Image (cartoon, rainbow, N blue to C red; front, top):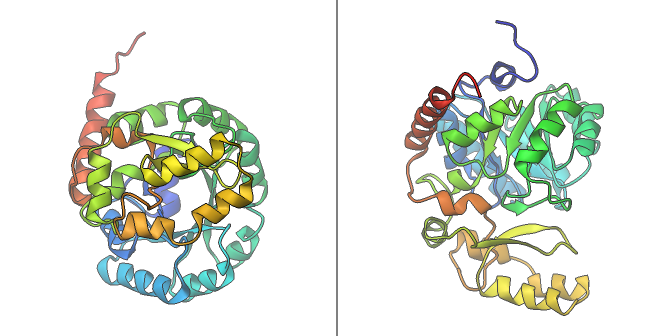
Length: 320
């Protein structure tokens, strides 16, 4: 069978994984334990570097290496300071799969490629995806408006975004945003994606670094429990809580971005997602959280995704 950029085989060959599934690198959620468990299950696990200091990042990379012999990678949001130190730590640890996000793909791609790395950039529009390809990226994650955490400003949903990105580039496209079961994986591949990136569903797993309070908040959420906020700063999809209501009130009276940034302060995401403060913490999660109803192990989750995918494909009628 010929392996084309739009086939799942292109992605498994690129990463050396069994499945064309990526566990998203989520800040304060995707530590070494989760990345290793996802990789052991057949997906590509990612350590979410986010705001990790170099020593903490080194710890999680070493932890992942001690728990799996499978390929795993790292997600580096480019908006954080100290990115050069994080890159050095990752390279020294032997990491050669980098997912970058929240910044220009030109910033690190050439440098990482010169060190023999595979580079994937997260994007939210066809035009930006083309810039990633031109910058030398090996693949792109096309992330729809439904996704949790930091998001695109254009509010393009996954169903609309994926085929447009597939048509815009020749490199493999990884669909993200609103994917939590095998049916959604089948839909993404039908739209031309080579694979999927899954965040929210992996956040609510046994191996996730998220606090139990946050995991339970995810599985008890409703379809209207999230909203995209702080578009004046960096758009982020949040689970509704007291902090969300405070930001909503500031935005309703058109508060300047400086005031919103001051209210956000520092450490909000850590206090919410890692430490479990469901009142005042920043709880980043995807819109699909309402479909998440349990906390399985990564092995159980991936086996379920495969079973659901097979059932979805079998359900498709050969003729419309």
